[in-house]
View 1 (spheres, rainbow, N blue to C red):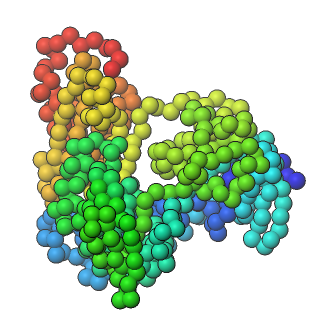
View 2: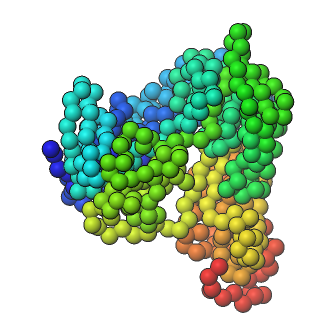
View 3: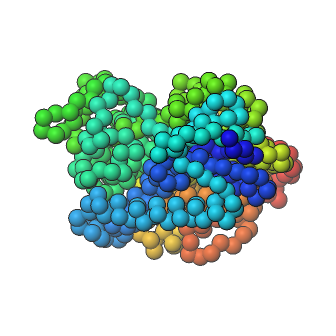
Amino acid sequence: MVQFDLVVVGSGPAGRRAAIQAAKLGKKVLVIEQGKRVGGVSVHTGTIPSKTLRETALNLTGWRERGFYGRAYRVKQEISAEDLRRRLLITLDHEVEVLEHQFARNRVQHMRGKASFVDPTTLQVIKDDGESLQITGTSILLAVGTKPFRPSYMPFDGKTVIDSDELLDIQELPRSLAVIGAGVIGIEYATIFSALDTAVTLIDPKSTMLDFIDHEIVEDFTYQLRDRNMKLHLGQKAEKVEKQADGKVHITLDSGRVVIVEMVLFAAGRMGATDTLNLEAAGLTADNRGRLSVNPETFQTSVPNIYAAGDVVGFPSLASTSMEQGRIAARVAVGAIAKEPPKFFPYGIYAVPEISTCGLTEEEVKQRGIPYECGIARFRETSRGHIMGLESGLLKLIFSLKTRRLLGVHIVGEGATELVHIGQAVLNLKGTVEYFVENTFNYPTLAEAYKIAGLDASNRMGDVEEKTVTAVSV
């Protein structure tokens, strides 16, 4: 029996940040990871692989240069699955090395094995060689992440009908692909394969997608997808998926339409990876998707010494927010002060094109009854956009008419996940439209779109000197 101040189950973004934070506070910390290498889903099958795949696809296809040289332009004429995998392996090796070094220099112990509860303070760990040992922790943090939802009616075979984890191991790029599920993961992979010139069909029973994103941004995004001939079957459910003798897959929709493709990616949700933890022994219960309920301020479960953070607690399920959740949970667990993070955080969707958002959407502003105005800038209006050959891209700022404060920033287009941080800073510092109008931005840059959007909104709102603006809350 070995005693630790904090035992962390899982080494993904939440787990590793929690472990390092507790170690920096002088606590004895152990990380238990059941995978072959540390890093969790984020490093090995989720965040890092999908973003590496995206960057590789855009580079090898010459996607970013097609505004100048036409849609037929390609850097590499024949792109194989091995071309994509080669860069991925290099990236993953680097990520694992960095993480192992972080653990070593912060004196975080880590162990490979499968953990399950014996009681609220004790975990049974089965190592790969069959050795079993018990670990006790004054506090325990569950950062086990999620795994793909695999319904029994879907004929998964790892080749023609796959989930998002299996996608990374495909041997050949399909000529046609159907993606079932128009959530973030489904949309990211659908657009990446579309950039690889695979004929992509996106299927989802909901008539809309990305409902938490500002609708004007989604409309612009949807237009771009249709413009490059991606088929969107929204509001239609895949009732039957059948593999055929010729190697093709037939998908029958509830509308009666049949979609015929070489490969099907099922990406309709994920499950919390809690089924092997023996939660009952600790007095915990997961919901029907394997997720755990926590106090949103402390990430404490219903059992006082057990915490949970990351994707296993549900939305927003971002690597960035998971890291912060893990850090806060660790500080609370070891008795340190944990400050509440800023109210607004950025949400990034690494599709082609990227989408990123921070703050209130126009729909949320309307629901709250806040008088507002919007400013719009299109990337093609910027000199940098012309230099890059951008034909699309949109930045939208929403301001309060009463206080002139920025309420939300929403971007679709090249570099959206980087550009959003300017708006995030102004938003959390309670800046106004005058910041964008009066400040100088590097020229030529895409960031100049902020000034264009700020001027657009300011012109619609009227000169601030004509009004008495009071510093009241929105």
